[in-house]
Image 1 (spheres, rainbow, N blue to C red):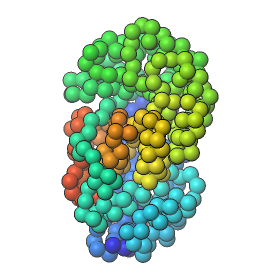
Image 2: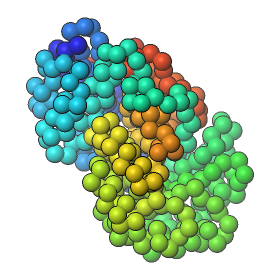
Image 3: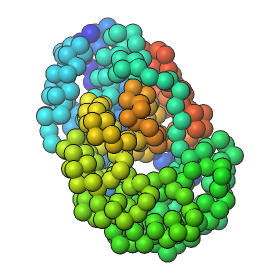
Image 4: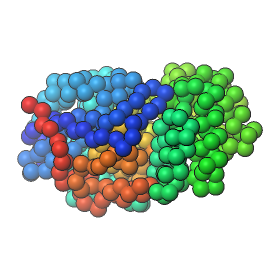
Length: 364
């Protein structure tokens, strides 16, 4: 199965409600779609959102990387050469992890298709039924409470609250939501780097003393401030999770050796795709460090790929934050994993199982 063409497209999917964090507000998911076509008629799909505030990647940088770097590298190559290809994808350029991820996802999709096997089984197997949390965007208190109650009514048992814009108001938000869903849902907090180390300790300790039970707090301080992460971890009981601090295996080792976090968040758009995500999970497993698999604001192509990785790497991966399809007004991807509120069911068709993508605009 040899790659004979690389095509690019753009896909837009509106969100049900604006996605608001300490870093940005987004109203629509916008992905670059990568399609690898083979001489056997198979197509592998990958995607990359523009998340410049986190990865530094824009749609333009992704498109240029795929056209100028990865298309020449891939054309004529045999999909069976997976390990060699993923190493070359990683080393062909620095950074631009979203472009790498899009190409790798499409390549792994084809590799699994070549064996007529679902991706998660090619990666090692696991349970095909998964459960995700859902994100409650930072907003007015009444709006966050209403959104949280609505999510619980839809069957979500884990809510991730976006905070980090105003420490005093953040505490009020958290207490109000906790009171509304106590006993019905677990709460995770994601500050998206919005607090200082001392603010984080003050806030988390205050919540602990007030009886607010949190499953974890994600990335409370700036990505590069591992000493700040360690400072927090040593002073609170609530587990701390590293997200923006983690891109690849080297950052994972640094976080683990510094005791900077209790949990690692793996996102394909930060790791540069599936190969590094697998390495991170295995590395964390050596040190008995728990992992979550999350996603950016991206379409269900990449979210499904992440779900396949999560299934294959359980129980090292014990938590999921793969809720974007539930935040969108519709899913344009036909085939593949299915999303019904908190439930994700992986397909049993080969690869990612994608049949077509509605509304895809091909790029010339």
